[in-house]
Length: 387
Figure 1 (cartoon, helix red, strand yellow):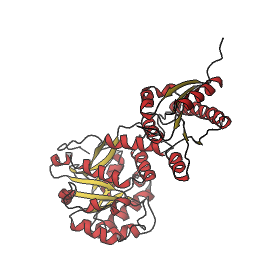
Figure 2: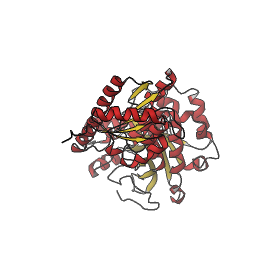
Figure 3: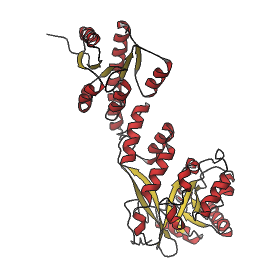
Figure 4: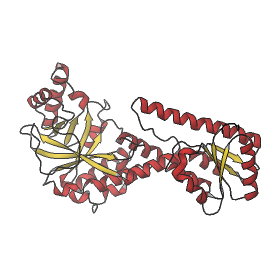
């Protein structure tokens, strides 16, 4: 009876003689080997990558090279190790290969002992990745951020394609009528399961402007039916350096008089050049500004003083259990009074109970937002939530 296979390998090389020689060597080492003549040919395995334990591919091939194959693989599988071989190694291509998630970069002619050891380790890494995913599912986590650039790019590209905006109503504290909606990013991409993961991917890939433009372009579409409601849109500090934000003909700018741009106090603005000038330009376009997460961000006043916001949003950590915490109530009371002195509207975020709502009304908060009113969801223009 033959020994069980150590694993299935996909071998990709346009050199027929080398391909055959390597396949024989790896088969004698105990692996099952399937072959492809180039990257394009190898993509027939895309739908069956779960059965592949490692891919060994030439870097330079006609039709589709190794890096292109790697990117295609990462569209479908974040874990399968890819070993790249090349007859013309150089530092630049090696860095690019590793950056895009190649498990190993092997110069030709390939040292067979090195190849065998590399394949052995790659198959073990593949098994460990499967176990890690199984462990994550056992503890209720079904997704994990890709570690390599190719995988992360694939995940991020898919997230942008399926991105949509949820809208959470913001109501007047006095009567519960709709004042506006906050637009919140969502994407049906399991490898980037929440806005924080999408933001982290954009930061790692240097694609913050692309993410911001996507958000701004899809945010405004349903709000045309919102009957004059104010739209709250979150900005990352990096968005302030994007020229398209200041385009007066953009869809968001065309409705600027009904838009509040939120900038979190958790983010430092020190690295933004000409910040005051940029803020002034936004105001001349008709936008209002809000400081988000007030009470949970930096202790300093740089953000607050520079933005001079029309709206402040109290962080939900300050709002939580305010009815049970006299210190929180006192702080919110004073923050609200000072904001009113400066002609700023105060939004209390994260309102979840009737008791919290009643205290926030009593201390003078103008607007309320939170699960007590409604969870974020598809837009519901014209619907009034009773609080």
